Length: 251
Image (cartoon, rainbow, N blue to C red):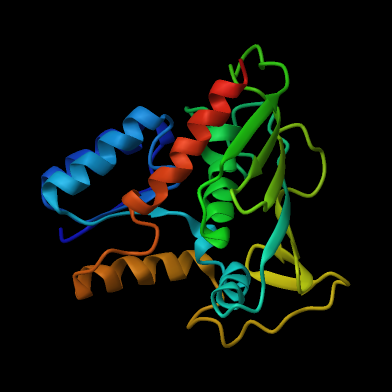
């Protein structure tokens, strides 16, 4: 075995990633790397101590839709003024996105919000200076909030509003609206549209139109080239710090 990809329940990620690194095996951890800041810090500390590659499956960094935005930001053609994001599922029982039962409980904050918190900081190139959250009632059986609202602001003034729900009886998924100084864009996974719903050609963004495949390609390339991958555990830690701040704001 040369490398490990962990697609196990969230609660196992930290311990398994640490075990892989201590065994000298490069590891790709499904999002999130952990469900607490303390465990995330342990993962990063182990990576630093062992020098073993550890990457986190932050797929939004790799979706061609978000890569197109990132490329224009890096070229100085766009500045994000606001991101408005909706993450909606219908999960009133312990099931996955396909409606299949499972033995562990997912989490709106540490999993689903993690996508957007990391992406917002990645796209703006800043760590948020203000972050707060509101959560609805705790589900009596699942023990988690089924509805959540998050607000963030960067030092330069960009803001992000994120709404999440497991109570939404309709189309599920995450939908991103980028309101920029030079246009508005709507990202739906690997597809991108302008503010008037005209599709944007992403064929020249990457070698694949599939964000998950692009994660795997980056993982293998980083191993072969002996370099830090995009979405390394170290790079993702600021998102986990922000999630911790949001969790503490719930009161």
